[in-house]
Length: 319
Length: 296
Image (cartoon, rainbow over all chains, first blue to last red; front, side):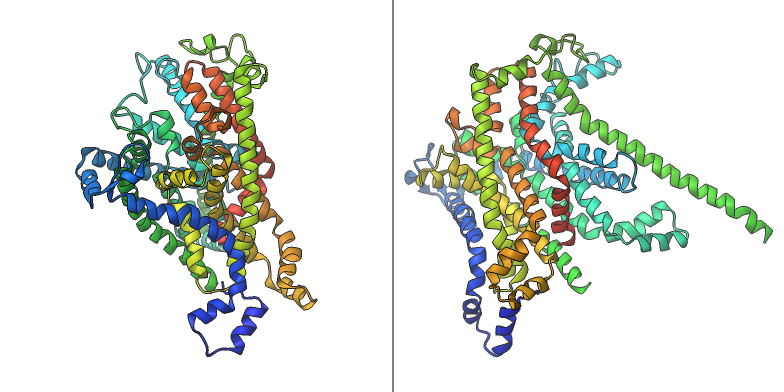
């Protein structure tokens, strides 16, 4: 990972003793020019908003964005959130949504990758078809599934009635107990291809010799998978699951378009709830405090994400 | 000896049977996944060629009695008010996505190169800071960005979207490209340097051409991301003539919810550009994603 082109390396060799931080930064001033545009955009659109969100979370804000009239109220917004019932309801939904979608998408994607690993006629076409849901817009996906789940003319309801499994078409997304699982099915439909791509790539890095050696030693298919393939894919699996978890934790479009969080908050997750608080009820302060809590949660996840990534890097460095 | 000779073929046969069992399980599973993936899309297409009346029958018509392309004609007809809106949304989406794509390549290429090649102080910190951006949801940034965009007069313009899309596309773009640069031997550049090229010349003339697949992949990724983005467009734009497709379709059909064939036709047409782009260039796309992620 420490590929260094000529000039920098030469410079370092010439002046080994002087290693003041400022001096090193000055020496590498030209290198920063390459990163500067990226960093500048990031600062405007990320650092400033984060600062502003934290600040707003300590204020009571009037509706409308007349933010000059805000008043400082300390931690009141946070107490409001943590003592409200909706918060715990929404947190529970978020947990089910994130863990359910992530785990099932990963397992389905991984299994598909394994099934597609052996070459057969039409494999490329099949793979391309399986990836399409991931490429199309989540808005389109939401509408397609909303239509499929439709309480009067939905195809699933019609099939269930046709097979005699239900007397009348069940109402999937207007029902408190079925709405969240129904939305998770849609989310998995869009997401398992991502896990599939990642795991397919991972599978290609599993050395063939190891598998053949295991076969010679008499390991059956399951043993070869469990003792050779799977350990080899540990890193890819961790990265994939983290990326999925973050994406799911942050998803907005599917619940927002399909149900808007209803019925009676049964499909509200953190993100949709925050959006509604901010842009629906114009409670900017509370919404900002929510965002800060979300931010802290994500930082924790982010810590593991970075650890998983740098774990990869270290492994590669030693190889 | 003789017993071994007798049992060996049997054990082998049993093992082959077990292997076949896994293979069959795999095939059945693939069929299941294919149905799960494809049936919703097929149902979208079938619905889109129904009339409004045929779509709202119970039990549904599995294949429309009178297939019609009326929904598509309506959406693509510039004389019709529906068609006017739809075509304008389509054009807006195309414009925003294209500009975003070009800009993000311009910004991401040098950054990824620097992260791959140079070891300046703070390199790792900056790299992970860029990646961490991926962690945070749009909603966290919405309120302050809305205020910021209003302050610099970009609200209700496509500029606000392009600037925002740039940042959420950049982390992955940089990550993908870095994977490519890591795989280009540094000796190639050193050779060019020896031949008298400056570092910048070596970068433009040697590294850039070699990383074309990565750049293509990055471009597709930003394009698809921008094309499908919803939440910022939903928040920043309020004027009808500026909406992009995802928001436009939503506004449009929340007013007349019963037109399911029209909605399905619109969903289909919104998906066509990205799916085609993806299918044509999928080799680059998959390769880049996996080179960045797996080999890192």
